[in-house]
Structures are given as structure tokens and as C-alpha cells.
Length: 366
Image (cartoon, rainbow, N blue to C red):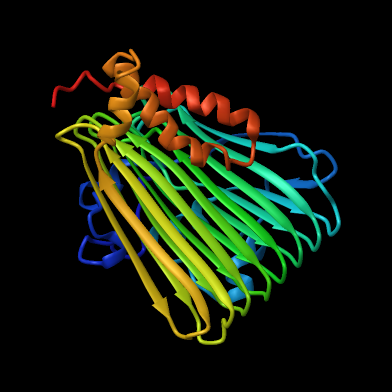
């Protein structure tokens, strides 16, 4: 089988949106493009297509005229393993649709592409799970495109449970039309280097979007997030909350941009990124940015990077809680704000347990 090749050169860390990344370590030639192993559960009464082609797979580009943002999104379009979910106007899908991608081999590249096209006044929740065999050394390049039609309500959650030798470079795109409501959520626990770029554009007046993420890296993992909150219509609202923790010798990066266009009067946009460093060798970077072209807005951004609050730890220890348990409770409490906003409540309990299992606080002396 042919190895993977790109039509244009790979990006470098000289590009701002790839700054701090590990892109220089990627050897694209070692991977063979392979169809994704995808399973879909739920979705009764709506159309789910695994053979879509052409414009159906690039609903955002067709509506906005935007080209693929980088070489990886272009490779995904070329090699896509598609899942197209179409929600008719007025249809409310009661139960979440769960899309699971399993990576089984090594030195393979898979390109899952999920398109959620929600008609006017429709409602749907989609959970997309990425998982792999423990010893897999593959590359996962997922793309999700979401269109929320007028007054539609779309909730999306991506869960990264990949093995610690898998690279993932993903792109999430969402478009909110007039009076629509979007939730784009991510939980990242797996992968060696796991990157997600999220572009949310509000193109219709009254549209709103919420973006939340939980990420937890250990060992030598790296989680890398880049976000754009693009307000392209008046009286739109966006709110972003990303919370992460790093331990051992792991790393994380968050860079975010709030972009408010000149005609987006009456907009409100908020961006918050909080990070815990749980070991001396761990490292986190947080870079929020604003690009505002009109004065009639409400806008704020905030970021923090630091260790566990000593007062919280002391409070628990003073009541007889052992130090290692106290730190575990503080970290789980730190993540609860995100877990409570995830669109599938049953999953939150399981994900909280997975975060607890990953904690190795106290194993790395400080």
C-alpha cells in the first residue's frame, strides 16, 4: 500500500498557530492511509450516510467559501472515511448518537470525517469517541463539521481515549446560523501528541456558542488546543471554558482568539483557560488573544497556570484527609465545572472515573 504524502509542505513552529507544537517530530512518510473502523449507535429517524462525497463532506466550505485551513484538513478531505448525519428541520433526536472510531493497526493513518447538518429548529446530541489498541503507533487526522441551521440546537462531544503512542491532529468546525445554539465539547485523556483546532463561526444574528474542554496529560504526553471564536453577525454570544492539568513530564498548550468583526455589534464573548501543573517537570502554556473591530461589545479573556491551591489542600488535610487523597479531590473538583457542562450526563460519571484513575499525584516527588 502507498505511504502517505502531502501536496504541500508540513507546517512549522514558525507559524503562530503551530507555535509550541511538536509538529517537527512528525514523519508523515511512515504512515499508510487506511479506512477508519467506525461504529454508529443511535440516530433513529435521521439519515446517516457512510458514502457521502463532494460538497456534502465540506458543508462549512460550501457555505462560507473557506478552504481547508491546513494540510491535515486537506488530507482528511482526500482520504476521508465519512459519516454524514442529516437532521431534518423540526426534528428533535431524543437520545445521543454515539460515533466510535477504533484504531487497530500501527503505522497507519486514518481520516474520520463527521458532518452534522442540522436543519432549522432541529435538535441533536452527538458523541464522537476515538480509541485504539494499546500498542498502536498510528496517526489519526479527524475532522468534524457542524452546521446548526436557524434556531437549531446542536451539542457535540469529542472524547480522546487513544493509546499513548498515537498521534492525533484534529480540526473541529462549527457554523451557527440565526438564533441557533451550539455546544462544542472535548475531553482529551489519550494520545502521545494530541492537537485539536476548533473554529466556531456565528454567522446569524442571535446565534450562541459554548465551547468547553477537559484535558489531562501524564508521562510525556502533550495536549495542544487552538480555538477561534468568530463573531460574524450582530447580537451573537460565545463562552469558552477550557481546563487542563499536566503531571510528570507532560505538556499542554492553549492559544485562543476571540474575533469580533466590524458588523458584529452587540456581541458578547468570553474566554477562560485554567491549568494545573501537578509536577515539577510538567509545563503548560496559555495564550489568549482578542481581535475586535467594533466598540459595541462585551468581551473578556482570562488564563492561569499554576499548582494546586495550598489553602484547599490544607483545608482537607486539617480535617484528616491524607495528602495524596486531598490532592486528588482538589483536581477532581477543579474539573467538575467542565464535567457538569458535558452534553451526555451518563458519560460524565465515567469520564470522572477515568480522570481519577489517571491521577498519579504523589508518585512524582516535588
